[in-house]
Image (cartoon, rainbow, N blue to C red; front, side, top):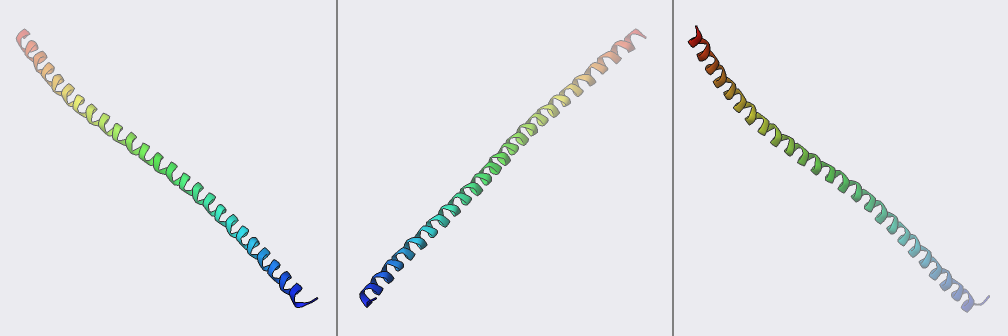
Length: 93
């Protein structure tokens, strides 16, 4: 085997090594991209769920405030009705 043949074989092996290394790097990069995409998808889903829970909480808080106001009005109306009933009972006696 002469030196030209050895040099040619060495260059071919080096080029093949570069292609194998490049293929491994591309595969690893694709795997990282897939894993990052899955992670981002899970995070986005959890954020959407948290935002939905916040909206539900705000709606419940508004309903609670409305009920509190209505209960206050009903209590005042009941007090007025009791005063009128007491006044009617006092007139009968």
